[in-house]
Amino acid sequence: MMTAISILALTACIKEEEDTSVDMSQLVGSWREDFCNPSLIPDPQGLLTFDSDGVYRLTAYSPTQEVIFEGTYKISSDDNTVELLSGYYKEVYFIAKLNSREMTWRDPHSSRFPTDRIFVRVTE
Image (cartoon, rainbow, N blue to C red; front, side, top):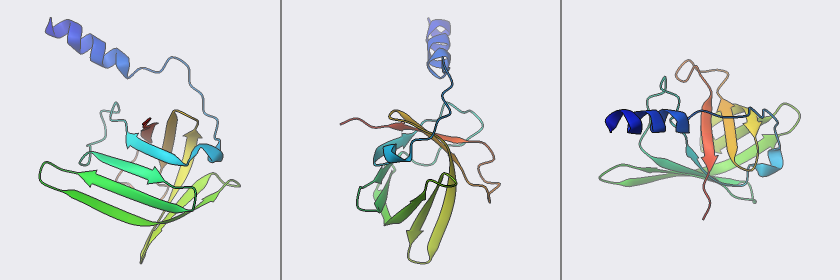
C-alpha cells in the first residue's frame, strides 16, 4: 500500500508537456510554491498574491502565526523580470515560465535557490 502511495505522489510531480512560454499578463492572482523539486527546502507554507494595482502580498503561515509582507512590484516584459519592492527591500526575479496555471522563476543573484522555483495558481 505504501509503495502505491509513494508512486502516486512521485508521478503527481511529473509534468507531461513542458511549456516554457512567458505571458506576463498572467502574473496577477494568487500563487503557492510547488515543492515537487526535492532540492528545495520549503519555507513555511505561504501565499504570494499579485494585485492588478501593482501591490504584492506574501502571506507566510506557520503552526503558530501568520506573517504578511507587503510591497509593490514592477514587471518588465522586455527581459521577463518582476521586481519586488518593500521599504528598503528589493529583489528581482527572472520569470522563466508563466501561464494561467504555473509560474517558474529564479533569482539570478542568489545561490540560496540555485534551481528554479515553481509556483502553481491558487483558484478560489
